[in-house]
Image (tube, rainbow, N blue to C red; front, side, top):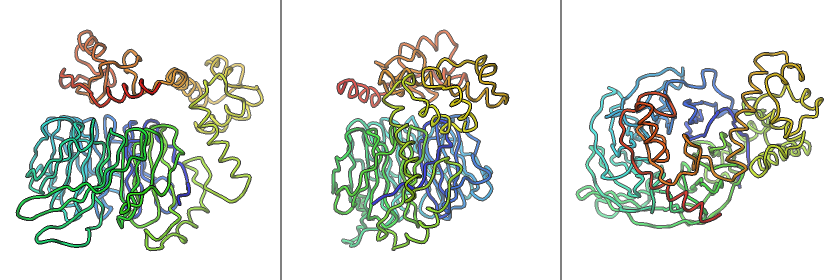
Length: 511
């Protein structure tokens, strides 16, 4: 049902979100950037990446016309960008300068909602760039938000597990308590209004996912005089770990989800059955999105990649598959440094070699890599020019780890200063990652300060999670600076990260 078109490998850190317009794909990352790609051939636009945020970018979304892109960040801002030029249109500072986790446009793009780590929800007028109003959920951080197709209400999801419906005037309409045990991670309305009306009620389909490993499909009825109601239609439990993202196709017939179990599932949204399972990512799948007009899905991951998939069954897109998919299958994506799918047997072997390397990277220590695996790693890191040099010197995994600046300069005779510095930097990154890979501990479970498995994780005002004892000691000795940014912490308040603590506990029980 789904065929891999290409892998985009430009981000240098975890990918947090993917979004499509009718002409572009946008991705954002912990590396503080947003990248834009043309949907014609998935080549990166000339002015990409977009730089404007000071910290990690958590979410991005297009306006209905595709002319504006919004992105939000730990730096407490939501930035509006011109998609035509890549220039910043305006910067919206969230009330209290709190890290912003989610942002979304209304269907007509007249307003935008942003949700923050302290539970506040801000409603902005896009034309005047003014804050219309703000409110807050009682507990948890707001990490999910989606407008109903009518534009008259939106739903937010929070880390305490609740779903909350709001009117476009920020009146709280309805709350579903503990919709997902341990926390909601994403919620998305189907773009299409459901058939049938009863009295003054209008019905919309909405999906939500969370830390309880489930995807839930709801029927949300908007009743003009009394508010709205949620009715649970399906509980989908195909994932074996927390589900981090979900999205509907443009006609509402398909639903896609990505999970900590590294898989992507595609469902029949009406029947609630799994149609396909995709397993190409090597780490948590954090983002997924359907293209509005073309048969494409994009999935983003903590493995720093974005994979673009083609849906083979064109019925969900009005049959608009063959012409565009043929064009894409003929284009080599130089940005991604990976070949498009082909029936050529030799190209298939190369693709399998890449996939084999990624699997090997997750299960073997680097010291066990063969010379061929080292060559593939060089290509993955954009160091293709060094492949022949490394092969000539029979550099395998163990020798790779022993390389230093002196050996690279004198023994390998790499004359380019830029290449020397880059390969040394990549080797150091590999060594840093090796500890968590070889021990099997997910990197996100390790405290950034002491690099030990967290027992009592807390969220600091910089938006990052730390072991409580480690960050308290840091604050005391470092005069309130952030361990991750070296900038002053806006507050010394530490919030327990119960979601992360439960995830660590679940992981430990599985060992």
